[in-house]
Image 1 (cartoon, rainbow, N blue to C red):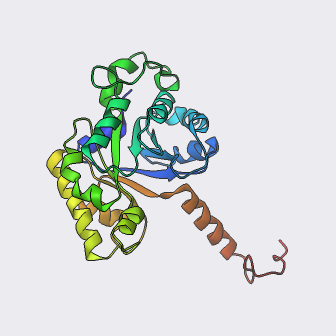
Image 2 (cartoon, helix red, strand yellow):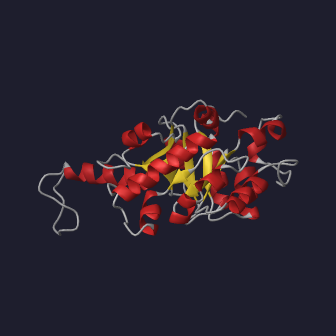
Image 3 (tube, helix red, strand yellow):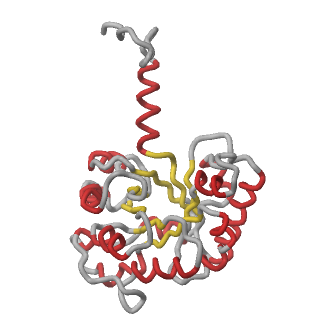
Length: 265
């Protein structure tokens, strides 16, 4: 299967997606139909695992020609890599990568021999794809997260690993590790972002970041102008929360949590 996200990134074009933490297939079904290039199902911080991920990818099958299923796993781990790849992940985001050794381990676990040691047992991944074994190594994205000072210091080492395609900045984690949590206009934070973009350009690795609609360096349009290409726009919970608050705001004279009854319809 052709990974549309990987080919966009290789061409230097932005690929926009969002983060999915609600483990219900309706969420990925609807989001996959809204114009995103990819969805990352987050299994690092969310309360679901590989079984649920399989269902989330199944609900995206009708959109598999336009929206790629990706996954964030809790750590570089053989079992997690196997499970999400065999369920159809077209790329894996790996948290807190801080060395070439860790990046090499991710590549080893995600690639079939001779490039790696992934076991031959794809299920949903190879559904109606007789060429899966021939194309998987080239099409699946390896995406280390840069979310610590050490990760920034080791950029050249990490990005030099053959098989690393993109990176992803967790701005909250990175700023927290820098001692300037969520200070996204802080010059030190912006300097770190520029270092990541420059290193990505030098090594042919597409820089990525979790973005929002804001007035700082995490604003998605600012990030794209800065050189980031693999950009997440908000989260499923973020969209849900804002929509509900906006809708309730239309009800005159009633605010949830302040007591009293809602106006009669």
